Image (cartoon, rainbow over all chains, first blue to last red; front, side, top):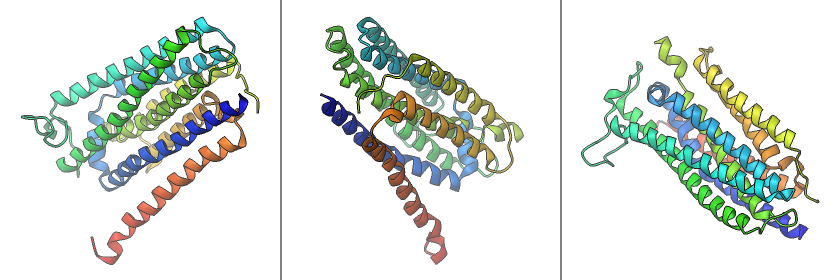
Length: 216
Length: 98
């Protein structure tokens, strides 16, 4: 049993390493274009809602905390607590997605969906306050990267919520206890990983160039 | 390696530290530091937060050597990805081909 547990955990870590490489490519694209067009990226970033981004960071960290408590409850065999923590984690995950949806809708209203993805509403940076040296084209580039990164992150959140729903189902049926709870532990690893991605996305997307806004 | 159960106190401490880090990064982001210091500070805080999550929430601190090798390898692959691709973009204009 011990070996099985170790093998399962190892497998999840290997998967997470491939995920880091997957997101790594997008982080690279971000780094490259940001270093080339800092003013445009700062202008576009300033248009994002800092309060919503910060609240979402808090929501996600709280969900990671309840996930850690879920694993802990399974380890010490408290089934009731396990179920409560899983439900809380799922609710927090859905809240994150809800707030994200509000942000996406704001972008839609402001015509900031890049390219011509939305019929009749092509990308238009009129609403963005451009800092000196920023071009509309590069502002659009920021939004491509913004939607690619937060979109992929949101997709991972959706998968995570689905995963936890399955875990919740089996937890309710009493499958997990101190002897066997590896699925809970492994889903937790995945959930924390998605949290880590957001820990980097938040300062990079929402905070860069904030200080330039009031400077001029 | 038998399973290590992390005391609940540790989870609460880490959670508080992560929340404090988030508040700190927002406050620091609104200040005007000289040069690239804003980015350096933001990334340092993010790295510390990520390390806390990996070590305690993901139980890495109590994991076997094998798992340590796997997840530290991620940093190595990421370093290769960044350094090789950047060396390309950085040097393109040296030969006047861009």
